[in-house]
Image (cartoon, rainbow, N blue to C red; front, side, top):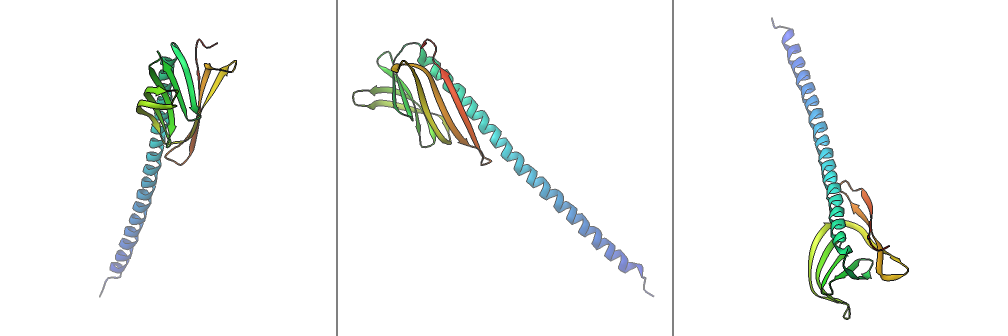
Length: 171
C-alpha cells in the first residue's frame, strides 16, 4: 500500500518554496527601489552642496573686486567685467549652461578680450542672469550684484537661487 501522506508533503513543499520565492522577490524589489531613491537623494544633496559652495566662492571673488574698482562693465545680462588697476580684468560669463570666472586683459575700445582665461565656477545652470543695481544711474558705482539662477537637480526638480552681493563702500 502506498502512503497517502507522500503527495501532501510534495504539495506542502511546493507551496512553501513558492511562498519563500515570492517573499524574497518582494524584499529584493523593495530594497532595489529604496537604494535607487536614496542614490537620487544623495546626488541631489551633493548638487545642492556644490551650488551653495559655488555661491560662496563667487562671493569671495566679488569681495576681491570691491576695493580698487575703477570700472565695472556690463556687456550683457550674461557677462560682467571689472577692471582693476587699469590692466588686470576679471569677470563672469554665463554661457552654455555654465558660470565661468574670467581673467585676463579686456579692451573696452574693441569691446573684446585680448587675452583671457576661463575657470568653471558651476555647471548645469538651467537659466541665469546678472542684474546690476547702480547708485544715481552711474554705471561705475555699483551698489549690488544680483545673480538669479535655476538649476536642474538629478531628481528632475528645479532649484531656484537668487544671490545678492552688496558692494561695500559703494554707498
